[in-house]
Amino acid sequence: MNSNHIRRPILLGTLAMLAFAGGCNTKTVHTAPMFAVPVVVAKAEQKTVPIDLTAIGSAEAYTNVSIKAQVNAVLEEVHIKEGQFVRKGDLLFTLDARPFEASLAQAQASLARDKAQAQLNRVQAERYAALYKAGVAPKETLDQMQANADAQQAAVRADEAAVQSAQLQLDYCKIYAPTAGRTGAIQVYPGNIVKQNDVPILIVINQISPIFMDFSIPEQYLGNVDKFMKQGRLQVEATPYGDTKAETGYLTFVDNTVDNTTGTIKLKATFDNSDNHLWPGQFSTVLLRLAQDENATVVPSQTVQNGQSGDFVYVVKSDSSVEQRTVKAGRTVGADTVISSGLQPGETVVTDGQLRLIPGMKVQVTNAPAASGSTQP
Figure 1 (cartoon, rainbow, N blue to C red):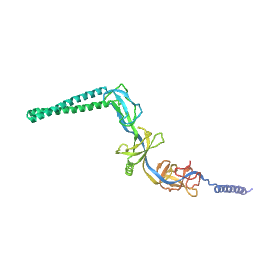
Figure 2 (cartoon, one colour; figure 1 turned 180 degrees about the vertical axis):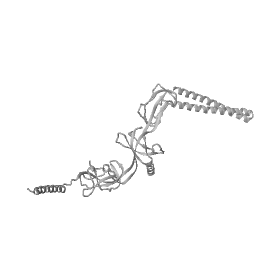
Figure 3 (cartoon, rainbow, N blue to C red; figure 1 turned 90 degrees about the vertical axis):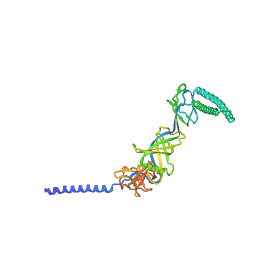
Figure 4 (cartoon, one colour; figure 1 turned 180 degrees about the horizontal axis):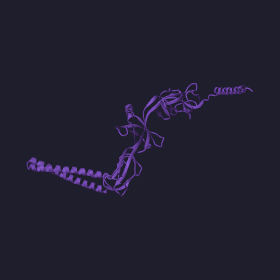
């Protein structure tokens, strides 16, 4: 048999198989279904958002008073308990007053004696003045009598000062609260001898209503703070660590120098703290509200993605396809991020499912598009 007749059927069979295979592949490409990626979306919204600065702050007592004895005496009685709230003028401690009562009595007696002597000397001076006018007393004697009267009057004034001093020492035997606040630990107990302005102190009183909150901000924000302070009081919110309740106060102090080692400036806010929510030494997250941005475009924070060219979002167009849009993301306020440019209010953006998207891909919205801050998970 001719070899050409043998090769021809084989060749024809091979070509037929290739044609069949090629036809199958072409049919598969043209009939493959286009799947839509399920995503969660939200509407970009225009609303008023605050312009805030965030820092870490520490509460500081409005007043801090260390109570010390002002006389040397034996402590007789303690009238308060540790950790007690006291009002201004409440009795705190009583000291042994007997030595000071005796000193006061002695000073009063000296005063009475010198007053009597001063009265006598004044009468004698007046008598010799009359005799001098009558020409029966020498001028030297008159001068001496007047000098004695003046000296005795000076002694009376010295005695009056001694009485006031003795009375003051006696008053120091009862120690009253100079300010309202909460007491600390009692350092000295009855029976101990306390000394004037000596240590240990008797007790410390911290006034915590109102209370200060100290915090620092970077120096580059000082100009903004100064600008907005001229427009009115600046609101400050403080939330203690581990808590969700925020206290509201107002900025009351800006330090007069920048810390060169940290590049920050110290600020202080005052809080009413009527419920004692803030505590001296306690750390809090502090939010300084400078102003309100009334026309900010915001989207849920999870909308903004980061790529090699910067921040971007996926925008859902009217034909259900997505567009990768470069945006300029600003600050974060709560669950929202402010978009400075690249996006208009009302546009629909993808908040969940971005990892499966590429530009131009069709999407299937699985939720009703909500405004910023109300996206369904």
